[in-house]
Length: 305
Image (cartoon, rainbow, N blue to C red; front, side, top):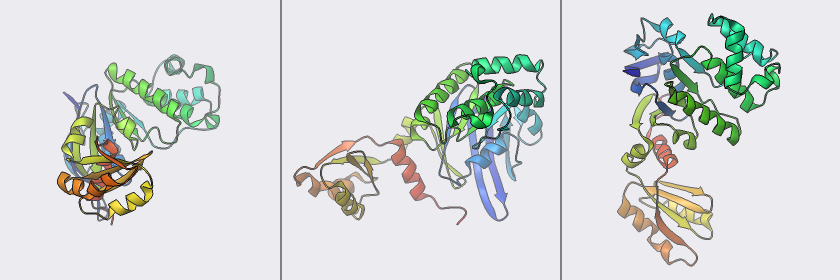
């Protein structure tokens, strides 16, 4: 049985279609990354799935409940972490969690709060005002509040924006631990390394779902060919290559250029003269998820334009 199984979701605001016939399935205990540019409809789709918005068209089930007729039941069994920190900054960590416990009618309140604090390593900071926390600790508090009622589905909307790499690593370790215990996770992110930690990814662009699958499958099916160029004066080389037939992307990655296209023969022809330049090397490289992400963006039309 799927944790999420929705078909043909549509959401309009005025004459703009923000979610355009999106269908998606997520298995129980699976971590699915939700990728796409800003304004692509990720947040709106997530809000539909957790019962906060009613779709204009489409149907489906979340945790076995009908998306439209049983939205209240869905809300009770979902944890939703928003992009922005949304707790009372003048209350302590423990007081914020006590408030959440009462919202969910958890009894006894103190027992639930203490267990949640302990599970997420917040016990030593229980009396610290939430407004004085760093980004990583605020994120940990938000996650604690989302899972304290033991939801079956966790919806995370760009949860690690603005936190340092160590906090992101710790956060993802916790997400994988929760998923191993049976929690289903749908997480929107712009970080390619985070997407690669998901079991599957789904890419949405300007309201339309373009692809879904394991990262390796999505990269393979994109049909991109990548070459790596190393050497001197890479900036000048990049400007030159960008205007050549067959070159669809040129991007610096450290001391190399990623040169990407869909026609291998045309790409080889565009790069042919570089191999004879002193100090410049050209070799076949691995297409990255970021290469695919950029290609999808280039091929999509902004639905708000």
